[in-house]
Length: 162
Image (cartoon, rainbow, N blue to C red; front, top):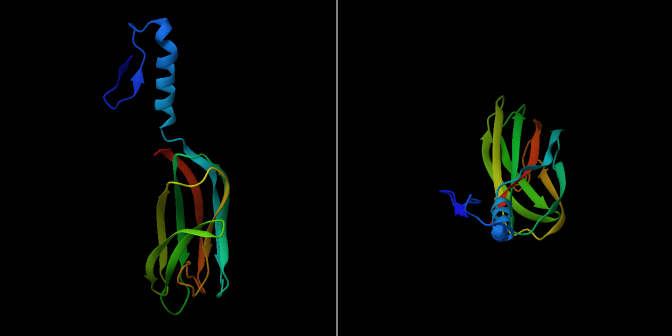
């Protein structure tokens, strides 16, 4: 068995059949560390005039495999029709537990905010989880869109072992 320049093992012509189970396991273990890409279909969201009520913009339920890194991704388009600047944050939750809040600056009246982001998370416990992208107007932990309309997508990717 030999290794590529990045350390991935591969079978060579000089490997004996009796050594193949060990070689095969090494190869399978190397493949297991690779990213698996999109693991939950993107969830589309849209909301208008949330007032001060907390709003769940999107929900993803997925079974986490221990030892893997996951990346939450989102696209967000906010049209600010308010008379004042609007701003706030996107908050990603695992059930009731806040994972991360990502803040963005105030958007002037009459302007749009087209944003995207990602959040890599490790150490999630194995098993089924429900993840939420949340928002409300006037709350610092959530996207503040008041009289604006917000829409976009929220998704989850497997980005490899850690």
